[in-house]
Image (cartoon, rainbow, N blue to C red; front, side):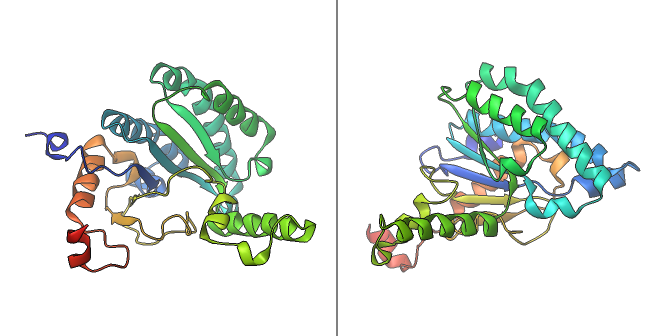
Length: 248
Protein backbone atom coordinates (compact mmCIF):
# COMPACT_ATOMS: atom_id res chain seq x y z
CA UNK A 1 0.00 0.00 0.00
CA UNK A 2 1.30 3.46 -0.90
CA UNK A 3 2.16 5.81 1.96
CA UNK A 4 -0.43 8.32 0.83
CA UNK A 5 -3.14 5.69 1.25
CA UNK A 6 -2.22 5.28 4.93
CA UNK A 7 -2.92 8.93 5.69
CA UNK A 8 -6.13 9.76 7.55
CA UNK A 9 -7.68 12.51 5.41
CA UNK A 10 -9.81 13.64 8.37
CA UNK A 11 -6.76 14.50 10.55
CA UNK A 12 -4.54 16.48 8.22
CA UNK A 13 -2.52 19.50 9.32
CA UNK A 14 -4.01 22.60 7.75
CA UNK A 15 -0.65 24.33 7.57
CA UNK A 16 2.80 22.79 7.12
CA UNK A 17 6.00 24.83 7.47
CA UNK A 18 9.35 23.58 6.17
CA UNK A 19 12.92 24.65 6.89
CA UNK A 20 14.60 23.60 3.64
CA UNK A 21 18.07 22.65 4.84
CA UNK A 22 20.98 20.72 3.38
CA UNK A 23 21.49 22.13 -0.11
CA UNK A 24 25.16 22.91 0.48
CA UNK A 25 25.96 19.51 1.96
CA UNK A 26 24.11 17.80 -0.89
CA UNK A 27 26.19 19.74 -3.41
CA UNK A 28 29.46 18.91 -1.66
CA UNK A 29 28.59 15.21 -1.82
CA UNK A 30 28.33 15.65 -5.59
CA UNK A 31 31.68 17.42 -5.66
CA UNK A 32 29.98 20.69 -6.65
CA UNK A 33 29.67 24.26 -5.37
CA UNK A 34 26.85 25.13 -2.95
CA UNK A 35 24.75 26.89 -5.61
CA UNK A 36 24.49 23.53 -7.42
CA UNK A 37 22.54 22.27 -4.42
CA UNK A 38 20.24 25.30 -4.46
CA UNK A 39 19.53 24.77 -8.17
CA UNK A 40 18.72 21.11 -7.61
CA UNK A 41 16.37 21.93 -4.72
CA UNK A 42 13.59 23.21 -6.99
CA UNK A 43 12.32 19.64 -7.53
CA UNK A 44 11.85 19.28 -3.76
CA UNK A 45 9.79 22.48 -3.67
CA UNK A 46 7.59 21.06 -6.43
CA UNK A 47 7.26 17.75 -4.58
CA UNK A 48 6.20 19.44 -1.33
CA UNK A 49 3.69 21.67 -3.13
CA UNK A 50 2.28 18.77 -5.16
CA UNK A 51 1.98 16.59 -2.07
CA UNK A 52 0.08 19.30 -0.16
CA UNK A 53 -2.16 19.93 -3.16
CA UNK A 54 -2.86 16.23 -3.53
CA UNK A 55 -4.05 16.09 0.08
CA UNK A 56 -5.87 19.46 -0.12
CA UNK A 57 -3.69 20.93 2.64
CA UNK A 58 -4.40 24.66 2.30
CA UNK A 59 -1.14 26.25 3.55
CA UNK A 60 2.53 25.48 2.97
CA UNK A 61 5.26 27.86 4.18
CA UNK A 62 8.84 27.44 2.97
CA UNK A 63 11.80 29.15 4.63
CA UNK A 64 13.58 30.34 1.48
CA UNK A 65 16.04 33.01 2.71
CA UNK A 66 16.62 34.34 6.21
CA UNK A 67 17.88 37.75 7.26
CA UNK A 68 20.96 35.92 8.60
CA UNK A 69 21.71 34.43 5.16
CA UNK A 70 23.11 37.79 4.03
CA UNK A 71 26.22 36.85 6.04
CA UNK A 72 27.01 34.04 3.58
CA UNK A 73 29.71 34.55 0.90
CA UNK A 74 28.70 37.32 -1.52
CA UNK A 75 29.01 35.04 -4.53
CA UNK A 76 26.52 32.57 -3.05
CA UNK A 77 24.05 35.30 -2.04
CA UNK A 78 24.15 36.90 -5.50
CA UNK A 79 23.63 33.51 -7.13
CA UNK A 80 20.70 32.79 -4.80
CA UNK A 81 19.01 36.07 -5.70
CA UNK A 82 19.44 35.37 -9.42
CA UNK A 83 18.14 31.85 -8.95
CA UNK A 84 15.08 33.16 -7.12
CA UNK A 85 14.28 35.59 -9.94
CA UNK A 86 14.80 32.89 -12.57
CA UNK A 87 12.70 30.31 -10.71
CA UNK A 88 9.76 32.59 -9.97
CA UNK A 89 9.67 33.78 -13.59
CA UNK A 90 9.80 30.20 -14.88
CA UNK A 91 7.35 28.67 -12.41
CA UNK A 92 4.59 31.29 -12.59
CA UNK A 93 2.78 29.38 -15.35
CA UNK A 94 2.89 26.26 -13.17
CA UNK A 95 1.44 28.14 -10.21
CA UNK A 96 -1.42 29.41 -12.36
CA UNK A 97 -2.03 26.03 -13.98
CA UNK A 98 -2.32 24.36 -10.56
CA UNK A 99 -4.43 27.12 -8.98
CA UNK A 100 -1.67 27.88 -6.42
CA UNK A 101 -1.65 31.25 -4.69
CA UNK A 102 1.83 32.58 -3.98
CA UNK A 103 2.27 34.71 -0.87
CA UNK A 104 5.33 36.07 0.92
CA UNK A 105 6.42 36.98 4.43
CA UNK A 106 9.58 38.91 5.13
CA UNK A 107 11.18 42.25 4.32
CA UNK A 108 10.93 42.46 0.52
CA UNK A 109 12.25 46.03 0.66
CA UNK A 110 15.61 44.59 1.65
CA UNK A 111 15.88 42.44 -1.50
CA UNK A 112 17.47 43.45 -4.79
CA UNK A 113 14.88 45.42 -6.80
CA UNK A 114 14.59 42.82 -9.56
CA UNK A 115 14.00 40.00 -7.08
CA UNK A 116 11.39 41.97 -5.12
CA UNK A 117 9.64 42.93 -8.35
CA UNK A 118 9.40 39.32 -9.58
CA UNK A 119 7.99 38.22 -6.23
CA UNK A 120 5.45 41.04 -6.11
CA UNK A 121 4.30 40.38 -9.68
CA UNK A 122 3.87 36.64 -9.03
CA UNK A 123 1.92 37.37 -5.84
CA UNK A 124 -0.34 39.78 -7.72
CA UNK A 125 -0.88 37.42 -10.67
CA UNK A 126 -1.87 34.50 -8.43
CA UNK A 127 -3.90 36.40 -5.83
CA UNK A 128 -7.26 35.05 -7.07
CA UNK A 129 -6.15 31.41 -7.12
CA UNK A 130 -8.10 29.28 -4.65
CA UNK A 131 -5.92 26.21 -4.21
CA UNK A 132 -2.79 25.79 -2.10
CA UNK A 133 -1.44 28.93 -0.42
CA UNK A 134 2.31 28.67 -1.02
CA UNK A 135 4.02 31.11 1.34
CA UNK A 136 7.68 31.96 0.81
CA UNK A 137 9.58 33.34 3.81
CA UNK A 138 12.12 35.58 2.05
CA UNK A 139 14.52 37.91 3.87
CA UNK A 140 12.63 36.76 6.93
CA UNK A 141 13.47 36.08 10.55
CA UNK A 142 11.13 35.71 13.47
CA UNK A 143 13.00 38.26 15.58
CA UNK A 144 12.66 40.80 12.75
CA UNK A 145 8.95 40.00 12.41
CA UNK A 146 8.30 40.33 16.15
CA UNK A 147 10.28 43.57 16.33
CA UNK A 148 8.20 45.01 13.46
CA UNK A 149 4.98 43.89 15.16
CA UNK A 150 5.97 45.49 18.47
CA UNK A 151 6.87 48.71 16.68
CA UNK A 152 3.48 48.71 14.93
CA UNK A 153 1.65 48.23 18.23
CA UNK A 154 3.79 50.89 19.93
CA UNK A 155 2.80 53.43 17.27
CA UNK A 156 -0.87 52.54 17.78
CA UNK A 157 -0.49 53.10 21.52
CA UNK A 158 1.35 56.37 20.89
CA UNK A 159 -1.38 57.72 18.63
CA UNK A 160 -4.08 56.64 21.07
CA UNK A 161 -5.80 54.03 18.90
CA UNK A 162 -4.71 51.15 21.16
CA UNK A 163 -4.89 50.80 24.95
CA UNK A 164 -1.89 48.82 26.29
CA UNK A 165 -4.27 46.95 28.59
CA UNK A 166 -6.12 45.65 25.52
CA UNK A 167 -3.07 43.96 23.98
CA UNK A 168 -3.62 40.20 23.85
CA UNK A 169 -2.20 37.17 22.06
CA UNK A 170 -4.71 37.89 19.28
CA UNK A 171 -3.60 41.53 19.03
CA UNK A 172 0.02 40.46 18.57
CA UNK A 173 -0.89 37.72 16.09
CA UNK A 174 -2.81 40.26 14.02
CA UNK A 175 0.28 42.50 13.86
CA UNK A 176 2.50 39.73 12.47
CA UNK A 177 3.33 39.05 8.83
CA UNK A 178 1.13 35.97 9.01
CA UNK A 179 -2.03 37.84 10.06
CA UNK A 180 -5.07 35.95 8.78
CA UNK A 181 -3.11 32.74 8.17
CA UNK A 182 -3.60 29.79 10.54
CA UNK A 183 -0.53 28.83 12.53
CA UNK A 184 1.44 25.80 11.28
CA UNK A 185 0.49 22.53 12.92
CA UNK A 186 3.49 20.63 11.55
CA UNK A 187 7.03 21.97 11.08
CA UNK A 188 9.47 19.87 9.06
CA UNK A 189 13.22 20.45 8.99
CA UNK A 190 15.43 18.50 6.63
CA UNK A 191 19.16 17.59 6.87
CA UNK A 192 19.11 16.29 10.45
CA UNK A 193 19.63 19.66 12.14
CA UNK A 194 17.36 20.10 15.19
CA UNK A 195 16.71 23.80 15.70
CA UNK A 196 14.22 26.43 14.56
CA UNK A 197 16.78 28.91 13.22
CA UNK A 198 14.71 32.02 13.96
CA UNK A 199 11.70 30.72 12.00
CA UNK A 200 8.09 31.47 13.00
CA UNK A 201 8.90 31.41 16.72
CA UNK A 202 5.50 32.83 17.76
CA UNK A 203 3.51 30.76 15.28
CA UNK A 204 5.21 27.44 16.06
CA UNK A 205 4.43 27.55 19.79
CA UNK A 206 2.24 24.43 19.59
CA UNK A 207 3.34 22.93 16.27
CA UNK A 208 4.54 19.37 16.07
CA UNK A 209 8.23 19.36 15.10
CA UNK A 210 9.56 16.73 12.71
CA UNK A 211 13.25 16.39 11.88
CA UNK A 212 14.49 14.19 9.05
CA UNK A 213 18.07 13.42 7.95
CA UNK A 214 17.03 13.73 4.30
CA UNK A 215 18.85 16.61 2.60
CA UNK A 216 16.44 19.06 0.99
CA UNK A 217 17.28 18.34 -2.70
CA UNK A 218 16.40 14.68 -2.02
CA UNK A 219 13.09 15.48 -0.30
CA UNK A 220 10.17 13.80 -2.03
CA UNK A 221 6.42 13.49 -1.70
CA UNK A 222 7.03 10.22 0.14
CA UNK A 223 9.13 12.08 2.72
CA UNK A 224 6.29 14.59 3.13
CA UNK A 225 3.79 11.77 3.59
CA UNK A 226 6.03 10.12 6.21
CA UNK A 227 6.09 13.38 8.17
CA UNK A 228 2.31 13.64 8.02
CA UNK A 229 1.90 10.04 9.18
CA UNK A 230 4.18 10.77 12.15
CA UNK A 231 2.12 13.89 12.89
CA UNK A 232 -1.03 11.76 12.98
CA UNK A 233 0.51 9.40 15.55
CA UNK A 234 1.04 12.20 18.05
CA UNK A 235 -1.40 13.35 20.71
CA UNK A 236 -1.76 17.13 20.63
CA UNK A 237 -2.74 18.22 24.15
CA UNK A 238 -2.23 22.03 24.17
CA UNK A 239 -1.51 21.99 27.91
CA UNK A 240 -4.34 19.60 28.79
CA UNK A 241 -4.09 15.99 29.97
CA UNK A 242 -4.68 12.95 27.79
CA UNK A 243 -7.90 12.30 29.68
CA UNK A 244 -9.18 15.78 28.95
CA UNK A 245 -8.39 15.43 25.25
CA UNK A 246 -10.21 12.10 25.04
CA UNK A 247 -13.26 13.62 26.74
CA UNK A 248 -13.57 16.38 24.13
